[in-house]
Image (cartoon, rainbow, N blue to C red; front, side, top):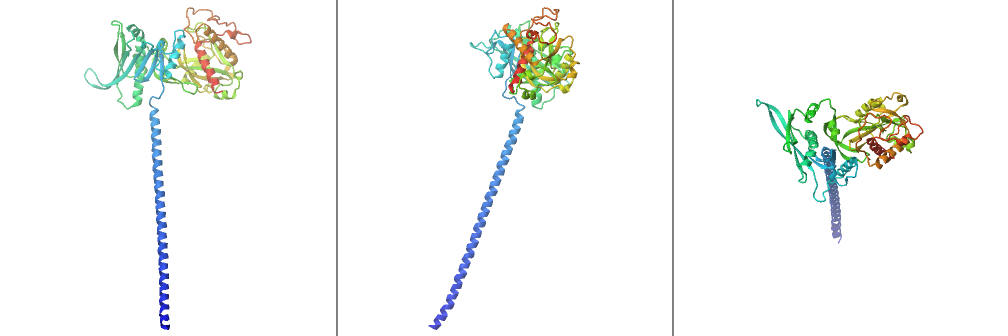
Length: 505
């Protein structure tokens, strides 16, 4: 028994050691396994995080690319026609400009909402606003709508002289004309002159957009084919002329029937109506000799300036001034009795027509110096707003400014004798009341916003014209100002001025 017990004890110890070793080995394996699992989990987690970062980076890059594409697209779209309806006016027609190569000419009398009992200026403004709203603008209760469509396209040809020598690229620009079946030959003849003028303006706008939109071979000359009414056959045909350029003034004069180069060129414009900031947006269509602008009553560019005493009227004034009675005096003048249009009428603006490609500020500086002798450019505001005025003799997009006349400048004011018979600073509130009374009188006789004035007597006494009582050439406490009749164009701009002033005040 003793020997047996001596034998078992070592075995037990050995087994104990074995079990301990096995436990240690198991613990080691478990630790290794745990470490392996933990490392594997961390690796998986790290891979997952890396994948997320890669995906996030990829999404960021995609978003950045989309943003860049969006910016690029926006920049590209800024050169393309926007969702605006451009329209202009020419004689008895409203010009619906779908694009640079398609213009539709609609008789103003055929536009929705226009009636014969409206003054001519009101009819034109109504037609313009109808087109701005995207309306088709044509009243056709019985399918009697009348319109004329001008389409423009160009072809590049080789310019060969008599010796067949290649002289470069000749661009042949062609205007084709179609009319609705309801348009009679007599009506087409009636519109033929204004169609000829508009065709030549359309060519300029078309070529401008062609040059801006893509790289093309620079032409060394132009062939121009436009509609032309043949008086012998009494039908519309076409005529072709050749020009060296469409950008220099010499060729513009040739484009318009060889006008003398001393004649001023003026921009015809199209408008889109109110831009939401108190003004009208417009685009230049082309250059036109000034006699044609007035002869066909084309929509063009001009300026109007209020001259204040001592204090400007601008956006800051609008914020700080509670009542118009606190506003500074305005310079008001009376036209001479020898003026062809509206002799002896009053005006609260200095106005003028902008030459072709002339900045409105340049026009303002010129007109102020010519009419009043004011020339301190530091006293001139930036443009306050644009407005469109339409009368039977004038259609203009007017850029409005303010000039502040300091006290030391008042003595330097000099009138242009052939333009101004009298002028002085008048309280703002007086001008407000006098203008409204003048508008009321025009409404009473059905002449608001103005009809073309009679020009029967240019030698009448300068103190009596158009019902004006002008017994006093200085503003005082009497009621003479109640009888002041203002130029209708100026009253239309004044209405826009009042709207601008009160809009955000």
